[in-house]
Length: 256
Image (cartoon, rainbow, N blue to C red; front, side, top):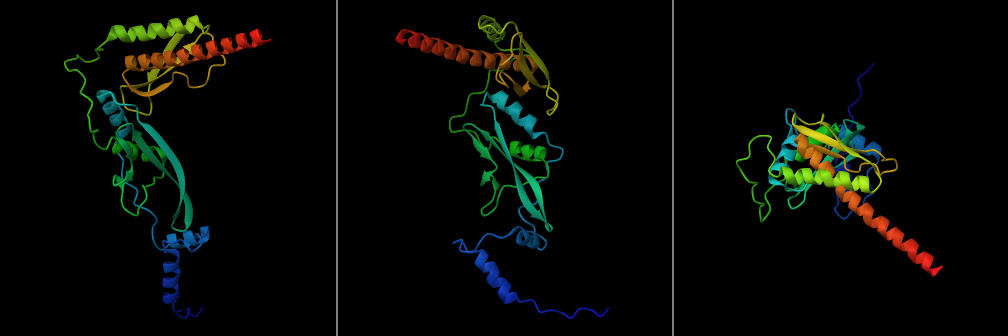
């Protein structure tokens, strides 16, 4: 078979096509899937995936948050499709936000001008990267450090913590949910010392899913207290709603 005759590449038309599509005014139509895949064979899209192997940044962030008594971080992840060497591939991106500190990654923090936040082949690495840069800097009025000189595993206010658990149990029984048990177990997604917890009601049929559930809490006792605190908060709201419903029924009866 004879070798192919060299073909002259129409570079001038290719440059014109690139300039047209790169126009900031957006006159050109969006590129098709085939066009994106073809370009990805020539140049890579996006940034190189950052190396987060060997890091446990999610656990470190949660530890820091609890030590400083800051609001719990929120993680928002999403799936994006990126052309990679001629094929559309799913990639993950995650943003971590801490109230009063902002979010990471964002422009200037993990994202350069004209670039997008990096994507990852798996969701866990995307979350680790987001946690690694959060919180980016202390707020204008930093929160005072917690009191020192507490022995390991000691609780600064055990009476108050026991009171929260007791109030949650009494309120659950008073509202007809029966006895309240709190189940805790090690959080398998984090390093040793972190726990997840959930409430178990004797009569809990019909309760909204996720009431009182916590994850990534440093310390078993702390996880129990946080579950009780969230249960108590939900029960107080439920009690108000019941009073409002009773009042509405009473007004309807009086009008009838």
